[in-house]
Length: 254
Image 1: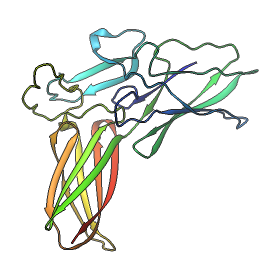
Image 2 (image 1 turned 180 degrees about the horizontal axis):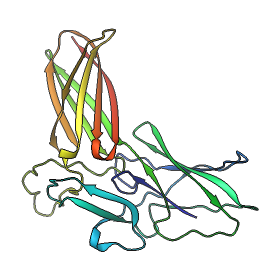
Image 3 (image 1 turned 90 degrees about the vertical axis):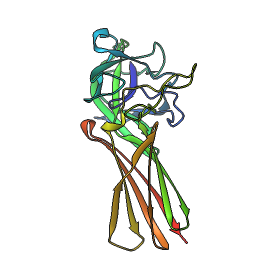
């Protein structure tokens, strides 16, 4: 049986620098026997985004949707063409009777997150057609760093799709230098809301303000704080897809 893991509104979890290799487990729901435990999945490629006119039997049914007004990419749905023989795991299950199986994929955002599907599988059944059983991982991969100069705190969040695909600045900046490919345009920054929340340790008051996209997958903001220790939260949301990311750091202002 062929299994793949795809980010919600994104691509197959592949070789992007932020993406750890996803893991697959398979469990018999009725007997509670684990058949496969944390098996690494191939992440050699994330697949290719194609326009809706290029639909074929092998594309993932999980569409990538660019919200209006779009940007470099026209708004509307796009399909993901899986890479042949990559970004998948072929599982062999030694069954003696019809079995209700739970397939669970674990990805990292950077903390572990899971997606699962439960289905009947019969002995001798071969389910190898593309795109395979596609498990969809929700969320946004979010990290944060903060620097302090005098009493000014500068916050920088890095936010990508769970597949590692970039969020692109809108309106787009100048074209890239010759020979350098531009980032994929299917996730424009206007679709995302990234907010910083500052709490003084032990305090109840929350200071919340938006971070502005300053470049590919990068959101920044700054503020002045009194000396003290602060709890910094960064919350990234893609409302149209119900994707949420979270990161946290401690900030010390001398």
